[in-house]
Length: 106
Image (cartoon, rainbow, N blue to C red; front, side, top):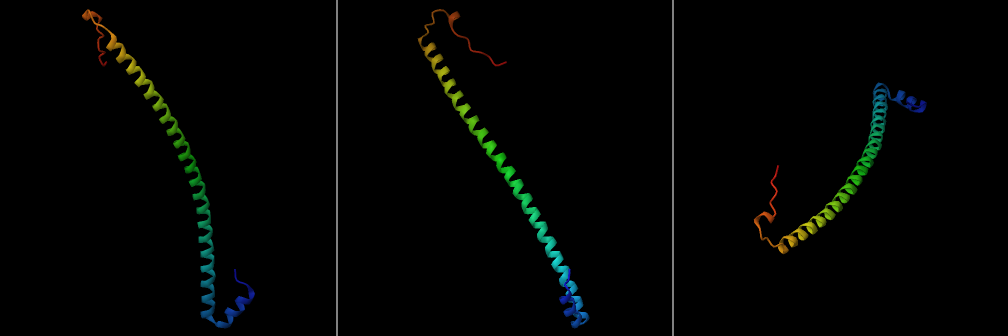
């Protein structure tokens, strides 16, 4: 904690010097503990940040894939609607029984 030369120097200063030296020693010890704590916290935060960035990247990739699936489904639905619309436009209804009936929601 204190080296011998520093202790002799403090002893020459009297009681005030000894008290000042002890306070200085405890202050240094406290600063070291605080610095070590912040270093540990910084490394912990770095690991958490890396993990969260990985989650964000995975979610972004999933959103992109979902968007592509929705686009392809939208194109397919448009094609189905267009084909049915053209079928109904070319369909000649001679008997009301032949008319397509709308579906009712359950």
